[in-house]
Length: 555
Ligand code: NOJ
Ligand code: CA
Image (tube, rainbow, N blue to C red):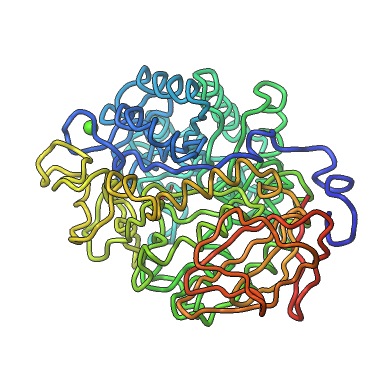
């Protein structure tokens, strides 16, 4: 139900588009390929390494693996600078290794998603090399009139001279999808249907079709909002993606696009199946778990986050943004929440140690979001400060490399990541003597890994807890208390201090589906520090709101 009492999907975007059912049940797991598992001892993770760990991931319960770019690249931006979209980077293996991974995942009921980088190529891509040579080529955005240094315009010292527009780093020239406000006086501001922009749209479809035909289930779409330039309200960029969505629905039904846009209320109605709340747009995500001690040095402090060990945060900022986006999306897709990603700090960061993050997972896995777990967060791998730049990871004040360290598989010196000498590792393994690892945590039922395993299993067994579905917030402070599907009550206390609240339901005692540090006593809910619980209410139980109750709904 939406807030106005209308079921979702009767008006607006949701009236005609729905995400495939598999996405509504998915738990996505992001893999940074260079750092996950090295199968051939060269110190760099690879596709075969991912394949060798599929049984573990299937046990964990994640069902959709999104791999950051694994295509041919000079790796000036960790592979987000692609020189050939259709070829797996040799360091990661071959296209046949991709086939084998997709097939091995399929055999376990899992899906593979790749990363689509539509807005720019590497400066070494043959398209760009041709564009440098050929003054008539307009696959990129060229000007001969911009006086350097102008932000984003990069002088070209070869061939046609002039300047090209970069999309991110200078080594990432922007592909030309046109301008929303063309201007003949500035001839590089081409309309969106000019030949260059049209050729790039066609190329985008070819890239997607190539990997769809090889069996990938979808793409995470890098900088999805960046395509059409000078585009107020992202209207033309939205139209471009609507066109892509129509094409997918026609040619590849059931495949999905998950955008890195960071504004689901705009991107999902435009056509994406899901979009993230992210660290760089608004403060909704950061108000949950950015405690200001990690990689996000370039954003102003936002005050205590909800999952700050010392408390003092509130769910208010998040809930306001959630409600607004959920209403605009109207059932057409999902809002994805990442535990972290390769661009910002992990959950376990600064003073928030791994024994404190289970409640964050409880929230993620019982909220009607599309949950996205960043590799290693499920064992409490920490954001490692103080590492040097690796392949463009240091972005101004943001030390993204701290979130890209090798996966910790076991307690051996190299953490089971690689048989290479440590000096050849993609990045150093976390040097902390008490660093967590998969083997140790799998042997310990009380470990974070087992919490996450149980919570994923609970979500999968319990339709009321999945993406979409209704949610009613009963208490937005500590503990955070909410009702899913009118039948399941969730209690989350993200801070060190215990917290209490009255039990809000009438009728017989509920069934306890998960409980970690929460007790129901005569005086109500007693939530210890860093605790959570999930209850199934007795049939017919009436639930009353607390004073600061809030509503955030989805169906
Ligand atoms: C966003 C990616 O997540 C980031 O890692 C990359 O540097 C930029 N886009 C440029 O592609
Ligand atoms: Ca390797």
